Image 1: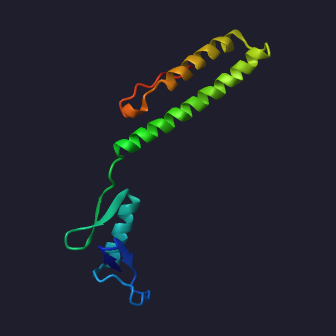
Image 2: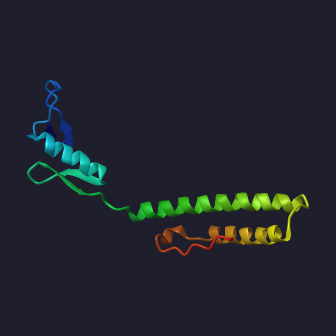
Length: 134
């Protein structure tokens, strides 16, 4: 197996690439190659070292933007779930089928949904999420 730092990729020896092979190829043993593939499977990333050889490093953590985007997705998902609960409970009330427990639950889910709408996801990961009604 061969590795190119420029391409950060592997090039099997048994494939004819014509004149398209990078000029910085280094030879790897099969065991070295398998080690790099196993490393990727174990959440590592392959990058070239200063001499052009591959090495495994930890994957970078999420960026601040990633964390905020995830918090926004979480918020939307929770609001959607709360809205479904509110709609079902409201149907029971509108049809005069709601039990006392459902009437109280409706109010709790509405309050929860309002509190969720007020969550400032730009402060992620330091968010104090409201407690979901029981």
